[in-house]
Image 1 (cartoon, rainbow, N blue to C red):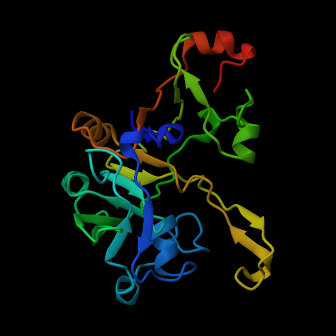
Image 2 (cartoon, rainbow, N blue to C red):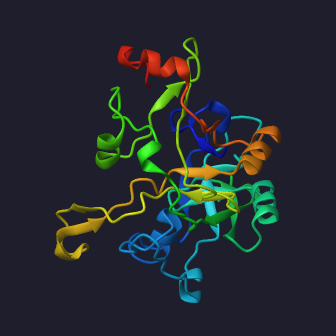
Length: 262
């Protein structure tokens, strides 16, 4: 089964880096910023993808300033720059080995802001893979701090419920079902609900008609078992990966009424 990242554990000290910002960043909004941050243009529907043009590529900044890394591990292998995900050479090399030509990488010089010391080259990752492969009817969702799950929660918020893998565990995992053979051939991808979702916004100048297209799972990343195992065994930093549960846990269903969903 694939892995996903445990967002509640992403601030482990060893993974911490504080981004100051890019030199000459592009304007946020439609264009290169939207593609790097979300993997799509603002109004791309499920299954659609605006192509990145050469003019857009020319806008990608090449220098990222950060504060001094907090530990001896230095710059993490994966972190969010505010303009998309930044990854290390190790991360990039393995992903390209698994999925040649499936992703795009832009080299970025990482600089310590207070000393101007170069901390090496990382890469802005253009991650646009969003296969519609989640079986929502058999995936456990739940509202934050509640034991609400199933179809209704899926319709409302698409928050994955944290399920303890045994009654004494202090952390949990996620029970996410995929369509048959859905993730075969994929090694890193964004989540998608696979259908149009719109929400009302006040900024009618930026959002014609006062509506914005929403993709609740586009910041949820999935790793294949092979790539996830590499990330963990090689001790890459920046994400805490959790193996996705393949089937319900017997004790969980017996105890569901007691609120043992996290």
